[in-house]
Amino acid sequence: MASSQQLNDFLARVERRAWRQAQYAVRDDEHALDIVQDAMLKLATRYADKSEAEWPMLFQTILQNTIRDFQRRAKLRNFWVSLFAKFSNHQNEDEADTDPLNHLPHISELNPSAEAEVDQQQKMALIEAGLTVLPARQREAFLLRYWEELDVTETAQVMGCSEGSVKTHCSRACHSLAAWLKERGVTL
Image 1 (tube, rainbow, N blue to C red):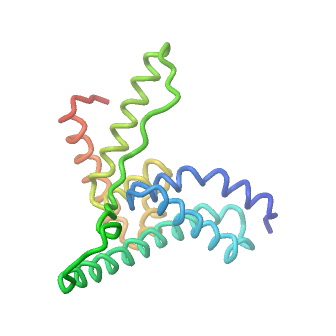
Image 2: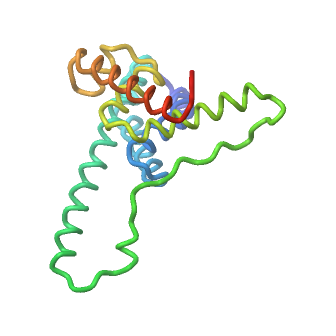
Image 3: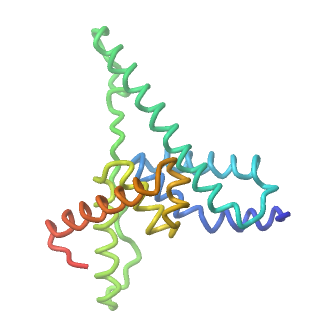
């Protein structure tokens, strides 16, 4: 049985990457943070008694389900807002200004004397921007496979689909991302 310190250490290791996954999915920093906190809380309250080796898969499954739940709720909220707006003669201006798109943060703390590092960071920023234009399932598969380094079977389990679907989503994501980067003059 793992200790609470081991759980804290695990959560500290995955926090930043989980936030990026959620941020790519919902395109809102604050909602992404809420999603990650919810996922961490669910892992800590429901699965702290599991072995430490099980936590990465459990956490990824919880995180992806929490993202999907948020997206479903947002879609339903947007439906009701648009429905009520049709029947309302006047809208509250604060409510109308709820654009869910949020730009990725700028690259910070660059070392201008290290040209290769700057080039690499600029390419990563473009890749991150390119990830935001991918369809949700392609982005999810890409991030789980290549950033979280889950194998095809684990990715399929987290995504709740077949291994063939994972391969298809990953292939399409790679091709789309490569084309998107090529249009911007980036070669990897």
